[in-house]
Image (cartoon, rainbow, N blue to C red):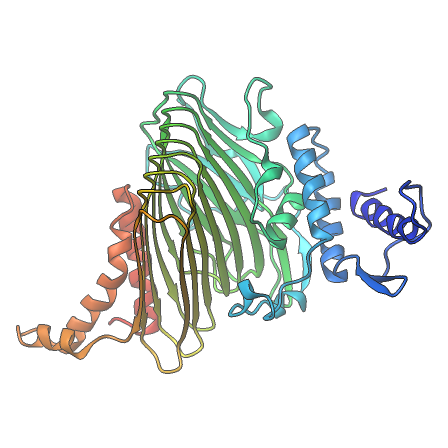
Length: 484
């Protein structure tokens, strides 16, 4: 019996025995149908959301076709299956989805992307800068024929979990706290995991470019194909690398990419993480980034997100040792009928932690919407912490909407912390400054709009990627009339 059905039966059986004040579980004839609740005495007990359970069952059936025997993957799926029974489909009543409307997803016909034997159309798809190591995940599954990892240093592993040698150790993936329904659905539906392991003391001289490509999809948002790519990155003590994640998909296809990356940095490890989201306008993009940092480690994220009908990035970073450095720089661009959403949480638990977060967003159309919910938590033991957070949003159209919720929680008493948020249109004083020096209004406006996002884009460590992203952003701004 499939895991979803078996778990539903076991839970129903437990409720029956609990009503009789018994502990022993035995097979029950009750199976899950359309009702998501069961009466126990005078109480109504939730057994799960019907839509969620139906989707989870589809994902499980699809993932089981790969028939991968791996203990880590098995534990992950078991844990995520249990989590799904505790969660309902998010609504505006849930604080984390208060400003992000995903009702249309529940009204869509969702199919699970299956591996295709047809050749991939690579026209217009770039695999990163020349010289970089490259892996490609097509509809959530690592494609070795489109990946190029020759020349990796000794001991470095880049590949699928199913091909990972037994002597490589991974962190317990099922114990990551703070996820939601969508990270659990990813754990159930991920057909295999992509894994990157850099051993102690190893420093990769070339970046690793990870391309996520969605090939399948429907004709509109009423019919979506969902894929669940999952990437695990482990850096040993003193290891260093640069990784680039790029998300794209087939033009004129409607699809849902539901991705997760889990990063584990041991003592003194350093990771430069670039994330570029360029999905097509009919796509739904959801992503969870979990980062766990050891003592003296450094994690730097630079992100630009400009594609998709709906894009949501959930970012959770935990400093698990003293003298840890975290830097996050993000730029979102929301155009017609787009929602760009960033929910971040940085948790500092140890002394002398350092964190900086800069979030910038441009909203260019009356139907566009941007959301930022940033939480920095400085716990009691995180003395001598230095933490800063700044959010700035630029509204370029009437009725354009941005919801900003910065949150700084401080329990320690010897810290240096700050945060701020600003939402505005271009200021007349800025335009006057240019005009006073002989620059016409349109040229001044172009310079101010682009430079607003360039503050983040210039932080990409790779010049090739930086130029590529700048050109993409200029094209999108020009297409919306924000610059001319």
